[in-house]
Length: 328
Image (cartoon, rainbow, N blue to C red):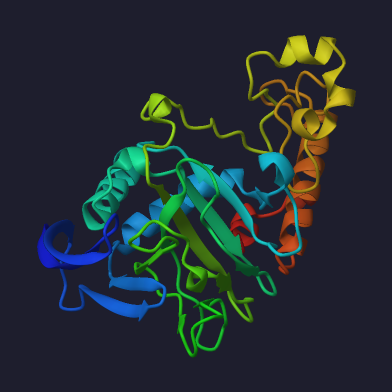
């Protein structure tokens, strides 16, 4: 049952405490707890329900790929400082995402229009995010970050969110909790204490959702107008983009191979037009079905090996996907 929980919450734009009501599930453990004042950081216990967290993870799973960082000139580049896998969910993508975003706006006192898209991250064993700052040096810096924990991590499993400049300040991931911390001081200058890190995972898997919130509206012309990506499953031979045939005819299957055809860990957007898969006829139990089964098995085997899971094989070399998907 969803009720209004009234509690003291930090005011994002001014850094003071105010009294407000949040539309959030109420339990005996709903509370906002100060974590640090340098930087200003607060944890909202049980900010989300388990069902909300599971729903967001399910939306993100088909699109996970190697995470990047902001490089020279604002380009997204891979870097060993960040070894997780991730994707983005559009703002207002569906009713659950919308409800979480509106709840964040109520808590931070900054409208949904100030939020970036929701970044979903998955950390496996040994994966981490090294010490870094979130705020950007531009005309609308990120004033604060909200980190939503979408899964639990086993005891002593690592994955803490730590502030290296603050002695003994680290937050252990707990499913449903939300960590809010400020990259800017109340006067608008950068807070050096906001340097933070995602500690390596020792056991289990950590799922998180990150919301960066700006001083000014973030790409307001796109708010609510962007469509979520269509899910393309490995066993389906079809294109994900309407222009795939034209791109393939123009030679993009070779010139832009990763996007068009994919790699060991991501599906290509134009596999059908590039001739990398075959559409089987109805009730085909001959060579076509065997080939599709073998290619699907090979793709899932690579993914599961990467996730440190073995993959038993069934008839025709076709794996039981549930065993693999349990590791993602």
